Image 1 (cartoon, rainbow, N blue to C red):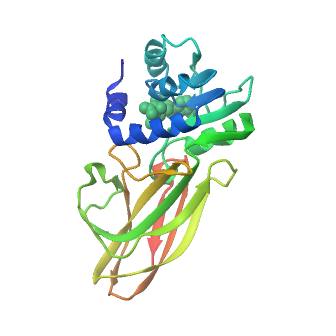
Image 2: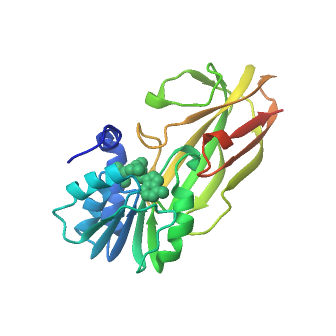
Amino acid sequence: MKTTPYHHNLLSDQERLAGFFEAIKEKSKGIVYDLGAGSGILSSQAASQAEHVFAVEKNPKTAQIAIHNLSNFDNVSVLVKDATKIIFPEKADLIICEMLDTGLIDEELIPVLQNARQYLKDHGEIIPCGIFNGLEPIHMETEHLCYQEGLKNNFKTMGPLKIYNSLNLKREFNEKVDVALKLPITDHGTVNGILITTFTLLTSNIICGPTPMLNPPLMVPTNPLKVSKGDKINLDLNYIMGGGLNTVKATIS
Ligand SMILES: C[S@@+](CC[C@H](N)C(=O)[O-])C[C@H]1O[C@@H](n2cnc3c(N)ncnc32)[C@H](O)[C@@H]1O
């Protein structure tokens, strides 16, 4: 299979692929859209069970790679289009959209589905079908927002994980996340950040936690606050899903 260096890393993440392959095997049939097709790997899995797969990729160079990789399938069409604006001639039985990132902040899954959902049959399905976002208060050593790539342990957990939003991707919802939470503190020290972790529901019975290339936990700095074990702190968190990391604001008191 031809790839770019980025798509090569995606293909090297066996845990990510295993989850998607299992979900696709369970759900692929009829008309399938693979939105953000990249190298075409998920389209190639869907094609063996589907009547027709529309693989949509915005980046022209990446789309050329998908065209090459999918050339042996006569039931796959690669469309070089922006999936936030695309118009489809027929409705799909299944939408696959691996445009995932932690908290759904930086990638376009949400704006893409806001457009594509209108082209899903009434009993059609979406992979992933749901998202749970959780956070915990932390003491972090860096001062800027960063991903826990390689899951290095350069922070200290200061309280338990709390799920702050759960999304059913078949339904429409507001792209703005604006939550006010009370967080229990379980240690003495300084809280100066939160760690966001995303859990992806691929189908109703396949859930994926973070893997090296799928939603590595995200550390977001806050103002610093001295705390003691047993305290409760207030957190205000807001961002726009699909709006980019510079929309994230987190403050504690
Ligand atoms: C995380 S990669 C997933 C690639 C592939 N589906 C896989 O699982 O290996 C997301 C892909 O979506 C593409 N993409 C991002 N925004 C898009 C948009 N608005 N419309 C179509 N493709 C988009 C990117 O160029 C990238 O190739």
